[in-house]
Image 1: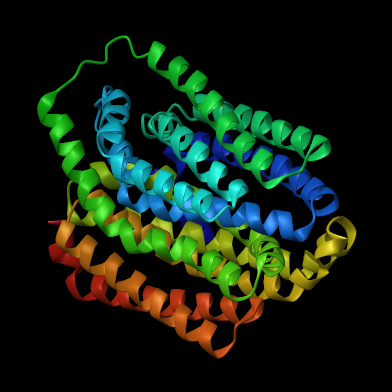
Image 2: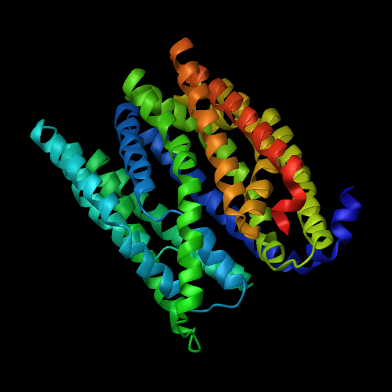
Length: 415
């Protein structure tokens, strides 16, 4: 199986991209790992849990914006539309009013309740996040036009700059407000600079109203499909904070950190094959690309899970001694990597083929299943391990549903 995957034409075509992307992931992993060490030793659990709560709230409020732009930019750029990057900024600004209003309103509510820390944080960061969000698509754009080296370098520089700024604030004044402001401001500054560099090289980029409208339509459909999925991404943190506490949210966050990082390697494979999936013009070609993507993802995920199960205790006992309570929950959650090896390619299949009915049907139903299971799990066992177990069960059931939809309606989905 592995030998066939390595010899497949699509794999060879994107070998260079995989090398640069994996290099970027390695640098991001090292910077994130070093940042986590500082977090574990210099920030108390209550402060870090509150910080994660703020980020999760802003993330869940973002569902009211045009969250599907990332997929729309990837597909438009892969088909040769160079103006996609500027069009994405315009569309993001156009549809960001809901997110901005809700975030500022939430901040005003906390100010009214005399919680000035959360109040100021939500108001300021809500505004900054909108400006940062409209210029965040340069890496996926560069990847989609196969400028893998440039995309990886920009991502690496961004990770290193943001991590350095966060470490500096952690050493000087590790407070919820300073941590959150540093995160969003450094994100905005780096996005602005590298987005400017990317656009500067697009000298032939010209607007095309038809392609921009197609991109907007795809982004809207993808945003609708993303609505419940994004809620699933962040609601578990809100539940842990509200029902268990800020300290437990810090432990929960450290439990998820390593498996989620390893999962990015699996998602990376699907991202690299996305242009080939978008441009495939016949059934056999789609089948080959999808098969190679899933096979490659499974190979990487199995290796990642085995590695982590054997080394998890060492990492926590050596570098995160204050978070040893996260060891066992983290080992359990590492199974999510195997789920992602099949789930991510299938999700990209629906997005690439632009079958909006199937896209909405599959992703929304899957997300609703996960939310229901998560709520039931929390009611049964309101603990870190209880939430993680419910999260895994929900993802397995969601994947089963999506896979069933794909198996039953595969031919109609790609024609």
